[in-house]
Each structure stands twice: as structure tokens, then as C-alpha cells.
Amino acid sequence: MDLRLTFNEDALNYDRLRPSYTDELFDDIIRFSNLNSSKSALEIGSGTGQATLPFLRSGSKVTAIEIGDKSAQFSRKKFAEFKTFKVINQDFESVQIDENVYDLVYSASAFHWIPLFLKKISDTINRCCGKFTFFDTMILCMGRKP
Image 1 (cartoon, rainbow, N blue to C red):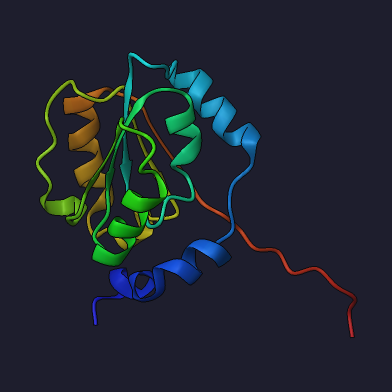
Image 2 (image 1 turned 120 degrees about the vertical axis):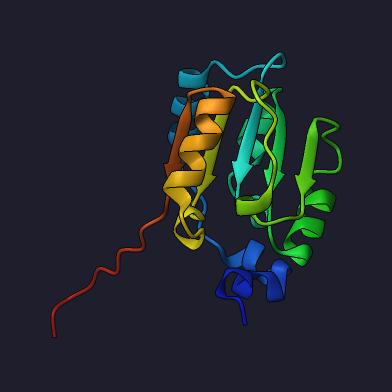
């Protein structure tokens, strides 16, 4: 099995149980990239959309690239009210990215699943916009020592 599709097997529970990100993180990224209704963003490895909604709420157009068919379909339904949202159900390595279309390229907790990520993202940023951010969650278990 392709490990990149692991989370695709149960999109509903993945969406329900996956940790989210802080509002401050999204606020900083949106402010940095000046996203608004005249701008567009490209999300790489969107999964079920844990990092998608804040960018859609900014008014910007969001195109999500997601390899998992169940996750892509889940996101389409989840964000159906946003006419500015589109999902490309394909792996990032083979997607052809149009030049000068996106004002921001971002990836949330997905970059480590993509072979040759840095090479492909470098090419994408150079062709697209020059602005890129990626972020991840870290689970800290705190408790008493035995």
C-alpha cells in the first residue's frame, strides 16, 4: 500500500480526530501573503481540509491538491458552500502548475509524504508566486514521571 494514502482510508474519522492549527498561525500567514478576494492560494496535500477553511474565509480562491480520492471527495462536500474552492485529485509530483496563478503556496503536515518535495516546491514557487509556507503539528505528551 502507498503510505501516502493511509489517511484516505477513513476520511470521516481522520477529519474528526486530526489536530488542527491555531488561529494565530493562519492570521500570520494570511497577513504575510496579503490574501483577500482578489488572491489565490494553492494547498499541497490538503487531506480533508484541516488547514483550508481560514484561507477560504479570507475570500481567496483555494485550489487543493490531494492524492486520496476519499479525502478529496470529503473536502469537496465539506467546503461546497465556497464557490472559490477546487480540489485536484492527483499526486503533487505529477500536477502541472500554471505560472503566476497563485499568490501563496502552502502545505500543512503533508510535505514529508512527498518524495523530492523540496525540488518540486522550489520549481512551483519559482513559477507561481515566490511565497511559500509549510507547517506541522507536534503532539506533546506531558505527565508525571513514574
